[in-house]
Length: 260
Image (tube, rainbow, N blue to C red; front, side, top):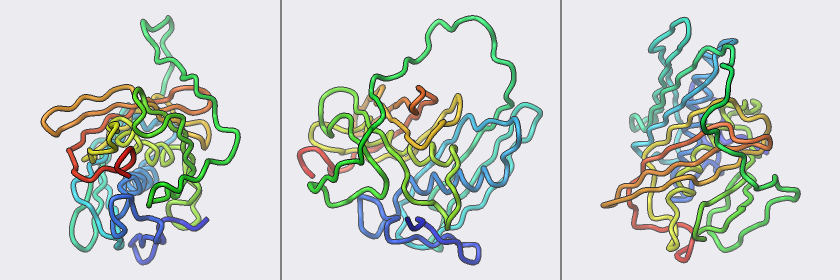
């Protein structure tokens, strides 16, 4: 499978399948989070430091044009490292990200008063079905455990099928960053379709995903006056490994559900 971006003279040039569902000339926001995670990991990953948080601000949509990612160190201490990334095109800054890396150590003894349980959705055992009802076909494997617009918590399994940049293998951290963008459509979906578009997402990780399959499960939604916040739990085939929270704004174009 061809990569979403090709690196040329310091720029990341998008392939046609890098477009998102909102417009045929708009980069998919999840890829920008993936690029930020890749850039920060490439420059600042160290043995014993764990990527515990990634916040991605998506405050401007971008046409299908070359992207640059610049990183900077904010804090490097004995037990914490904080780094930022700025994502730009020739039109200006389109997003930013901040990552927190924490020093791994001995796990405390005793039991927690509450631990997020594993979900009861087994991993898929067949290729994902093709949905001919929607105009945008996702350039990744998607298994819907629940249907769009179905009352109750939304659940999906996702698996990347394309490299992000050139032929580079996807790391577990980048896989998690890409899958985390699914927090918005799952937590903000309504019976009339997806009528919120997210402005950011914050991924928190107790550990990295252990395999290519990542499950995303809605665990919260609140909205009022056109502003929403949503929450999901991130799973792999061994159990939950993190959470993702998004903020979103009401959007008049519904995707999925009854208006698709």
